[in-house]
Image (cartoon, rainbow, N blue to C red; front, side, top):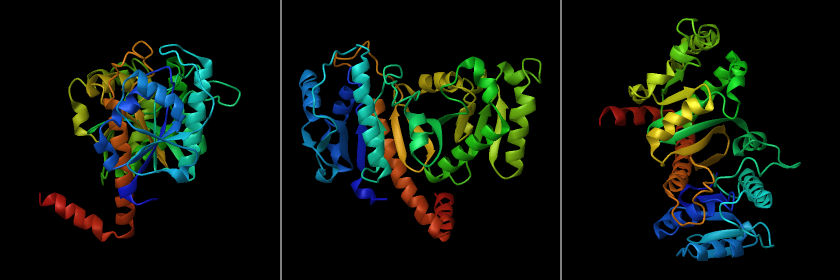
Length: 353
């Protein structure tokens, strides 16, 4: 792992017909961003120059052909391909999808090899990326295959953290996936992430129920009393501070989430609808549980506003910030793990504040 003061942020460009390239360029128009990280965009400098001109961006791009040519303080663009691409903002284009994956797989390989420190991914279209070579529903599943560990989608905005037991699974299949083994794996993954990535020594984790009112003691479904509750009890008895299952409908509206370091939802929309409502476009999708760091904004390609120059870049900027913060946190965690006395010192500092 490289020293924290020279963090190289790899960026996959996503769907070039969406808002990804716009929010990337807007993020780094502020030269102060280049004072604490060095961005490397995996794309093509001619394509991004065209995008820059379209949006009248003030960013200065530095094209490179090899990662050993990276210059700190510049917006580096690695030429992953040489040929031109016909862009039509707002259009779902299978050919453009192929280049989104070229960018992503090249960036992932660089991450695996330690040539970049963290990866921030711009949005892709999950439909037009599919091919014989790439049969994954999204970034997370591919990263889970290529990197070490067990991936978990963790949505983050300040102290609000929402993880998922299942992510891109049809609603009518969610119950089939909820097993004690899966629940234990996801809770242990999020516990480890809260400790090493967010510096929380004894994290408190809340788990939401699958059914309305958490099943009402089996009246509206039995998954809570037969699967979720016994698993939570077993983990709690073994020292994990995990609580629930809580009825999902009132959990966020009553601000119960503020009492916990993370919340685990049973399926995608159960967690992401309240999260996106509360995060106001500043949320970040973090792939927890892996040996490398990857973040992304909490929005999609937004074809409806692509090319209009009105895309909000705050979520992407927050994704860059979070990747850097987690990079620092992991270095600190490694140092503390080598010297247990630092844990005591850290606890004393916290108690004396």
